[in-house]
Length: 436
Ligand SMILES: NC(=O)c1ccc[n+]([C@@H]2O[C@H](COP(=O)([O-])OP(=O)(O)OC[C@H]3O[C@@H](n4cnc5c(N)ncnc54)[C@H](O)[C@@H]3O)[C@@H](O)[C@H]2O)c1
Ligand SMILES: N[C@@H](CCO)C(=O)O
Ligand code: NA
Image 1 (cartoon, rainbow, N blue to C red):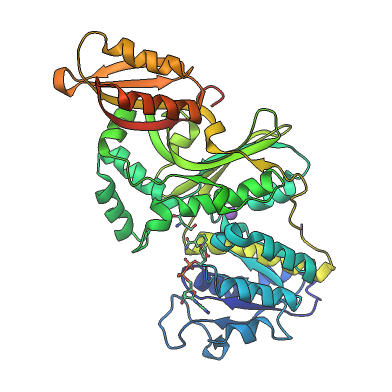
Image 2: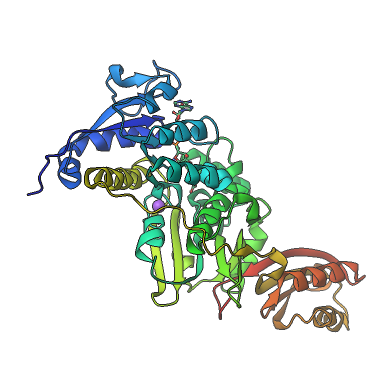
């Protein structure tokens, strides 16, 4: 039996929305187990909310509610501050105030960490405070702690995966039912996956923030959201999905953090990509997330599970609360930010991958040769070509071997200038085959 002999540790919760309300529930329902695991009881010291009288998903003792988050985070009796408000301000100021007063901080805030992680990590170091953020990337899936701790002795080459549940749900619907992007988005909104303003998800901002956080940890370098090349899924049509299907691919929004071949830099990108239907990521359906980590000694690891939702995300938050609480009981500290490698982020033009290119062309002799010539001029090698349709409706669909983004872009520019190419219908990266 563990001893619950330590003095009570007090937790201040900032925000009582989808995630916060589940944190309150779990702290209450699992109080005895948590106390045994930590070695000291955890007690809610207060819950900062925007409005006091609102109906919530969980019953909270009204005496704990406050609209003065600033006073709560600096209260002498508070040991741990949990930030689940989201956004940049006031979350940043509240976290900084908490750290300056020596509190340990747990946050789920990917937007803040990706925009200004440097300030938050520096404050943690200066304040001698713990900063844990497992819930910020891929919700319930343990990914931050494995990267920061379990893989701290290895050399990570690549992190690749699906880190946004809403867009995976939309793309999965488009693939399974042939739905248009807007119909699939409406369904995602009706089910509560996508928010009323779905921009952060569908334009890839949410995934880009997560990619920045993952790359920073994996490559021991500082990465912000601005370093991430980003494309969303709003331009993907039912025809793109059907064309991918016809060639044995499925379209997924991927986050890819990869070292360059010489290991001196790395790229971070978020964009839709085609992957073979027998690739493990192709089987990630609905709003699930899955991430591969490829490391020198460990080889290929796969992390899979619920990347969003109140209870799954609160599970990650609770795990962090237990970790920082244990540290306080034992007088230990969690890992600090690690940016010693200071590698550069290379521009997307240096990315090497394969491409699926769909062209609307005149169906007449010599067209294929002229198109192939344009690829050859930029040293982009073609792997497969097929023609869809005939006459005025003819489309040429090409898949390339590995080439740089810069060479592919130059090829596309050249193709647009050919009189026989009526339209470049779509260009999409192909991942998950060979070493791509
Ligand atoms: N919902 C998810 O599935 C999920 C998954 C992973 C990470 N996250 C992250 O968790 C955080 C919270 O997300 P959520 O889905 O619970 O959002 P939410 O909008 O449901 O909850 C945020 C709550 O904070 C409150 N709030 C806003 N300003 C406040 C202030 N100044 N003081 C006190 N409370 C204030 C809001 O009224 C709201 O109730 C975000 O950073 C989000 O990115 C959410
Ligand atoms: N909106 C995110 C959940 C929070 O990270 C998603 O759809 O995955
Ligand atoms: Na996580």
